[in-house]
Image (cartoon, rainbow, N blue to C red; front, top):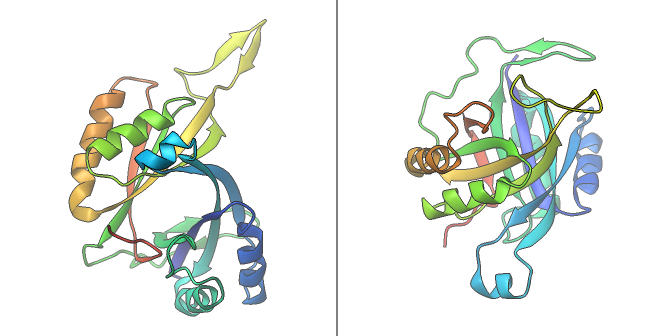
Length: 214
């Protein structure tokens, strides 16, 4: 079975409505994450409106239904219109949980996609530094999600109790030809080659909705 992960970045309070609609079309469930988007616009920065709350919805469906589902959701929520949300799909090869699913081994993109996603996991407070680095290399911004994690270089002890430090996950969508430059700049400025400074990975996107070029 070929599987697709649908990621929808929407305004605050909208993800639940999108998920309810998806369930009405046969989706069993999804996950909503809270984050905020960054807008690099001088006038908005002056007004203190650079950071806008966002919700990130993850839904996994089989490839045979993703096109019809996205058509129906797009018709209802009009993602093709500016500021109505950003949607992209990527391939998933295995799911383990309440039930297990795995791909058939051919779930790979053969053609070079137009867009790729860059995900960077860093300590809390460094998400903006990632955005700034990416922007200097041509990115138009990104979405920051609050999280927490623990690793051999990260867990601290306070009064003998292990504390897992807070993290920020930065999600950036960029054209394929720009990805290498953005990744290189982020890695250099955040010194990701040093243990504990962060993790970065790239995913090829199959389909995108709501992405506009200025």
